[in-house]
Length: 133
Image (cartoon, rainbow, N blue to C red; front, side, top):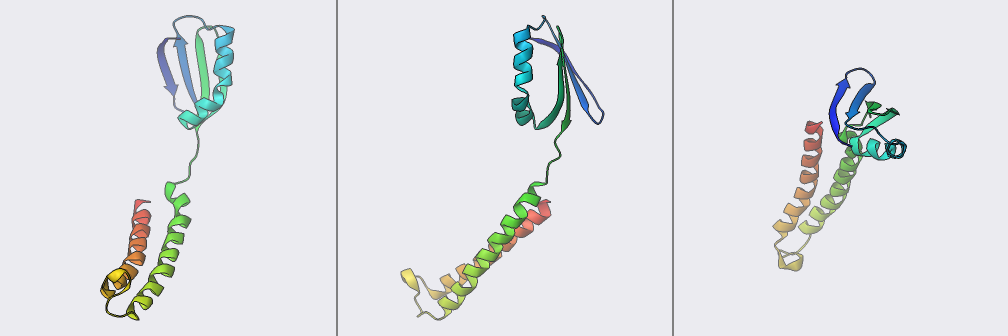
């Protein structure tokens, strides 16, 4: 089904008009109307109506209002920061109480650094996501 041109008119509901080179069959029109959900999913739009005549296809659509990605990830970032603090603070106090060489033969200062770095990295991710908004 080759298309000669497409046309979009701006308004609250957009109209997309296709003119085909040859007339559409009833089977093609039925398949077009049945693939509405797939078109909505692929194009991220809400299709209100599809009109198909012999040589023209009219699709009435509007964009789907979406949430900001940060609005969705905000609770996840806060949760990561809380978990990092819950892990990092006890790790610091545990490392301070150890002998000069901590577990795995690594020095105590390494474990203190890890305990401080975990909450700082979580805070940096939080700030990055906030600035990106």
